[in-house]
Length: 307
Image (cartoon, rainbow, N blue to C red; front, side):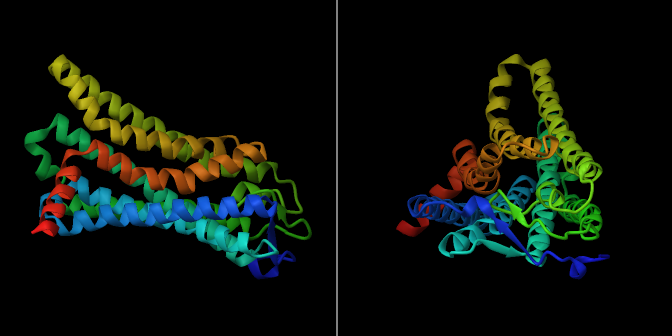
């Protein structure tokens, strides 16, 4: 069983999607509305950043990429769930399962790097305002995005390459809405403990390390502002509140899922909804409500439509 095509298991049964018709209809409605919100909200942010010259700055370049990544993250799982809820037999092929896992971890890795880049951007803008444009030049911004994709691919492939070589010889049922490394490893016909440790060490350490790095970064910014002028602290906190909120929304489910690799199924399902549907749909709302430039851009767009 040296590779993906040699596995005896050809499909994975997703037990979380097996429920009464009333619950199915409710889940279909909720998932459809959330996914529609993800698509419309994030593409609207992307549209504003592309077509409004006032938003052609490093922060909004990174925000546009974050919006695109949020669409991709939701698209890896939510459409498949909606389709499966409409079908009688809730399965995903083993190959599709592995592909879904890879995309989840690649996109997750990209989002972590983008959040770090956005923290660095705010740190530069607040702590070194006179050098902001020279530091956050287009080359650096593009480098952040490329680094994100490279990091995401390495992160995903480092786990994928050993998982596809595990022997899957019988069990094929997962009590979840989607495929992920911790769940699939449990199906292997071998001692899964050491492989679960590898996943925890990889995804868990990456999630926790990035989270604490971001919290330290934003704390450093607030302390720096406070030392300069305590009166400006509240203004800086309002400016950073959107970023901090997004960090907590994204990393809280990640840390539960990967630092605690065997959460109860009920918690796992709720965390899935938060990570793949609620967080991506809330990000545009958070940045719109908390960001003066975005609100002004929307106002300009509305005025153009009136005239």
